[in-house]
Structures are given as C-alpha cells and as structure tokens.
Length: 72
Image (cartoon, rainbow, N blue to C red; front, side):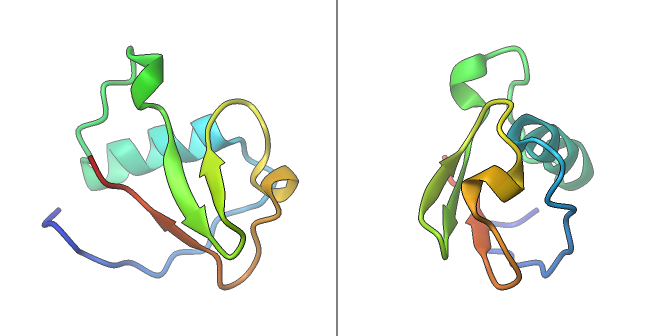
C-alpha cells in the first residue's frame, strides 16, 4: 500500500475496533505490530473518534460516509 492510498469499503458495524484493525492490517499490509497494543488504533472522522479496543464500530457511532484512516 502506498502512502495516501484511498479505499471505499463496507464494514459491518457489529465488529470491534480491534477486529477491524487486525483485518485491515492483514488485508492491506499496514505493518501494524499486532503484539504492540499501543499500535492497535485507527482514526476516524464523521464522527471524530480514535478507534481502539473491544468497542464495536456502532458504539463509536460510525455510519455510511465515515472516514477511517491510518497514519504512522
């Protein structure tokens, strides 16, 4: 994956933030160290949120049109 790549994906809201992070890491090769809990997060807008932990995406208030991004 190149810097600033953009993807439009559909994600079930019933999964946890950690499940999403691990799946995107595997599918897109983000290079997140899954053994380092401090790296297990993504940022979101609409609503603004720091996605991490066992909270579901629905609990964060994500919806159609939410943007999630990864930057390190």
